[in-house]
Length: 210
Image 1 (cartoon, rainbow, N blue to C red):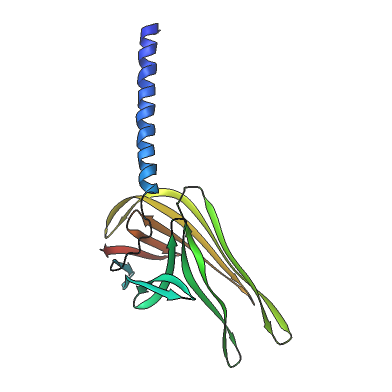
Image 2: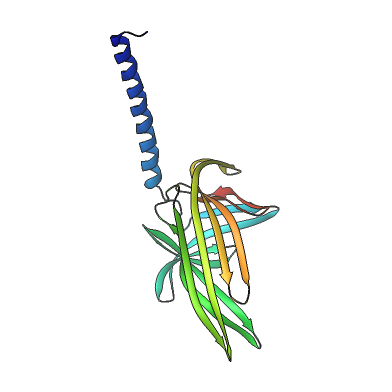
């Protein structure tokens, strides 16, 4: 049996340990909240590998699309366009549908790809609906993106070891004449961006960045 004095000492030590752990957790949460998980500063670049293929990504700088200011990012010299704010990151989405004699653009907009700040356990969605009319035929078109921020990971890739990476699970559906579905996972590192992406058996990993 412990004496009252011993009980007081043990209780005090336990409280001190809890406070230390809580303080550490708070520091990490504050660090993640203050970090940029999708940095798009002109001149920044990343190099990835997908199997034996190499992917080069470079931020070109500010431009305008659809009468909106945005940032051009070249992925293997093909331009992509993003709009960033403290609460979200949007990407230009263009989808077309083939028809006799050509194709129609059925979706051209900046859709949400990340809601900020990233918080473990959060779900978010981005949805676009329209109706396509081809003569007597009417087709409903829906583009749905669902994302879960599942956890914080330590990720090791050829470019290094990265703490405090958010793991995001994506599910995308496009419903028109038929339904197509894509599922993938991304890991975003603080002040670096995407360090790993997995879709099925295909892995894209970061090998260098600046």
